[in-house]
Image 1 (cartoon, rainbow, N blue to C red):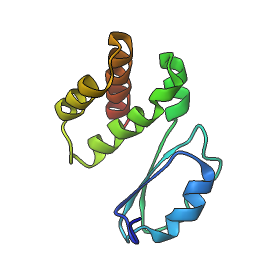
Image 2: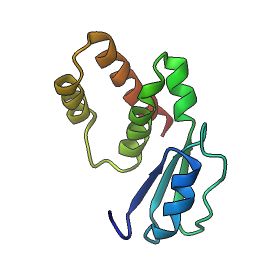
Image 3: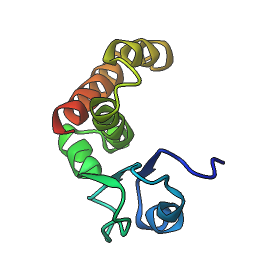
Length: 113
């Protein structure tokens, strides 16, 4: 566990409430506004709300919400290239359909962020 992260990704309200106070000043919070019912209470952080679970459901695969959040993150903080994530998807995901959905989810997040 990191004591003071630069970035907090909260996919649910309990995670946001538990970890937001640990964020470094001027850190970044990205949260799934489809599931997180409270806004971050960290005045010194940059916050990005992404309705990732809703977007993933509309895409047809609710499990891709994490890729939507990852896409928003790499748009905001370019520490990975989309091509690197595509390579990882290709190595891990065996189904052509799921690879396509994961790539689409990543792009949805990049376009949203």
